[in-house]
Image 1: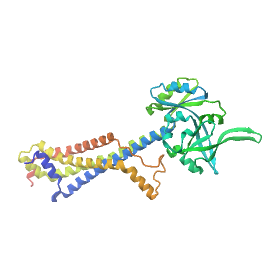
Image 2: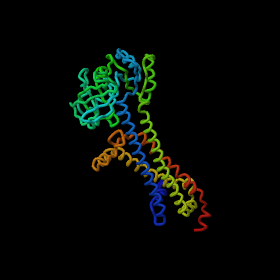
Image 3: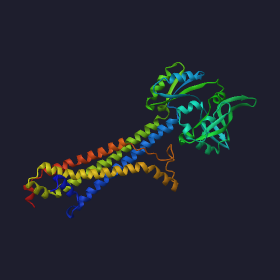
Image 4: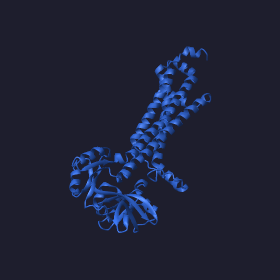
Length: 411
């Protein structure tokens, strides 16, 4: 005879018979629900992980992760940068000068945040050099008045690399004709493509040229830092400020973009919780299907007990069926979820491009990112297995308590 007996009987009960087609349908629905729950949860969490990754690498790769700035120009900024880099959390440091203004060209006007940089240092703290689509960041040399813009800004202003664009500053300059805004013509020497949030708001010019526009001596307004751990940015910024507490002011990405990161984390937690309810519903379906099966198989259970089957054996028989449903549903859902997580970006990108649906216009990137984390897969599958197992306990124990004499009396 096939051994173990509990496994043989449990697998036999999972096959549909004419007398319990409805029960088998409920079991199938439970299995499908478990499959869909696991697959959708893996896929959605992978997409949320992708947004989290893109935020860290793209947005936080461009905006300052931590900065210290002064109320006046820092002429000896290399010494300050070297002192800041002694912090073990600081990967690199670079000087900057920030100014706000408007760009005008071809009758179009757009607000812009212009950052004066030293290309050699900027490449160490930002990802801009990896996302240049035209020209080079090295073209920002002092005295040449070149500017590097985002690709979206170039399209909005109708510009190409090599064209002229006028930067208008809010500071006013006296002249024989009266007080007029300060402006300067720049040559577009490069374009980058990172994300809409960055491309439409940020521009780069040489730091010395920025100082001339603001009529400041040569130097830097502040130092920006790239960190090993971005979540330690407030502490690192405070330690950098303590180098010269009377002169420096600290800031970090949690003040400028923390709300965006927090929104993604909250959305990931809430969506994960809601989708996890699908798995819980599937587990309750397993309970209902097993309860109905126990009711249908009362006579069989009574006969087994008269032949000497122990309550432990009866419990194991019905636990096998529930575990089989859980294993098949979880494994199938895991395979489907992994496949979807690895391909959903390409599939939705093709659909978006083919049908011109503009699915990603509301996001800071123009595609659907996905990052599969095997730890998430392990947690989801383990939880699904555990719920499937727990769902079998009550029906199996109920089956073990059936009394043969009382049951067979009415058969």
